[in-house]
Image 1: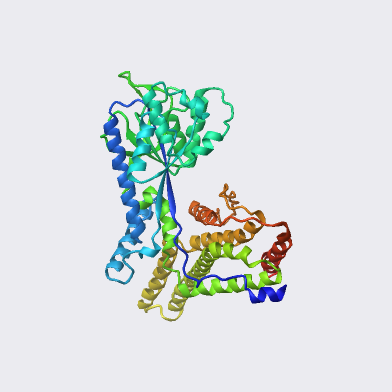
Image 2: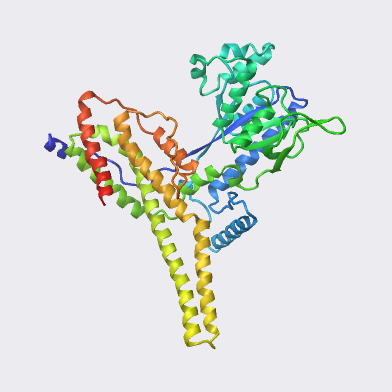
Length: 493
C-alpha cells in the first residue's frame, strides 16, 4: 500500500502563488417608516448616501494610505492624520508604492437586509440592489403567509412579492417554521433586532420621534446604537436635511416641550469622510490582502514545507490522494500567507521592543557618564535627547502600525486555518456556521471581527465531499501524525 502511494503522491498542487485576495461583503440593514410624506425625496437621499458609501470604500480599496477613525482622542486623531499625510508624501516621492496593485485589491460586495415592509424598507432595498448590485436577505417578523396578510392593498402585496422573489434566502423562509409569538408587535421587535444583529451598517429613514409601539423605528435605532452599529439617519420629514450618524438615543419615551411638541434627545455626528469611517472591518481585510510585509519567497518556503509534510504524513497514514488534495488546495495557500505574516510581524515587534529598551538604556547611560566624567560638556545632553526621542518615536510607530496587534491577529487566523484542514476531514462540514465565540485572555481580547470574516470566507470555499466509513482509520491516523503530535511536541518545548 505504501509503495502505491509513493508512486502517486497525495499533493499535485500548482506552484505556490499568493492566494487570491479574500473578498468582503458589507451588510447593510434597512429600517424606516411605512408612510412617507415625500417618497421621491427619500429615494434621492438614499441614492446619494449609497453612492457616497460605495465611492469612499472604492477609494479605500485602491489607496493603501488612509487615516484611521478608530482613534478616539484628539491626540490620536492628529497622529493618524499626520501619519497619513507623511505616507502620501512618501508615495508621491515613490519611496512607498502609490497604489494597491489590482491583483491585491479587495473585492467588495454589498448585501441588503430588510423586512420589505411598505415605504422606507422597500425604497432602501431597491436602491441598494440598483446602485450597488446588492444581494437581498429578507427577515420576516412572522411566517410568510401571515406576513402577507399585513398588506391590504393588492399593489402593495404585489410589490412585496416581486422583491421577495429576489431574496437569496427565499426558499428557506418559505419552508421554515416560526416560533409562536404573542403579538404582531413582538414579531416586529424580534425581526428588527435580528436585522440589526445581522448587519454592519443600518440605514434608518426616521422622523426623530418615539415609536408608537414595540418594534418601531426609534426602538430599532436605539437598539442598533446599543450594539455599536453604524446608524445612518435620513430625516423622514425633510429628506433634504444632511444625513447624520446616530451615536445614541437618550430617551425613547415621549417628552413634551413648552410649545407642546414631542421630541427625544438624539446624539449625532457628521457623515464619515474616509473609508474607515464607513467600515473599519473592510479596511482591515483590505490591509491584510495588500500587506506590504508580505514576501513571496517566505510564503513559498512555508507553503512547500507544509506541502511536503502533509504529503509524507498522508503516505504514512494510507490516506487517499483525492481526499486531502482539495482541502489543501483551498486552505493551504491562505494558511501559509497568514503564518508568514504572523512570523514577520512577530519579528518586527520583538526587534522594535528590544531597540526601544536599548535606546532608553543608552539615554540613561549617557546621562550617567556625562554627570560623572564630563559635567561641563553640555553637548552630551543632545545625544541623550536624541536617544530618548528615538525611543519615543519607535514606541509611537509600533502603535500606529499595529505591529503587535497584527502579529496576534495573523497568528490567530493562521491557527484557525491550520485547524480547519483537520476539522474539515473529521466533520465533513463545508457550510458556514456561527464562528466559535472568542475566549478573552488578559493580554489579548481576541481577534478583530475582520479575522473571523476572512476565516468564514475561506471556509465557504472548501469543496464538498463525502467520507466513506473505510477512510476513517486513515483520517484518524493522519490527524494524529500531522496535528496532535505537533501540539504535544510544542507543549513539551
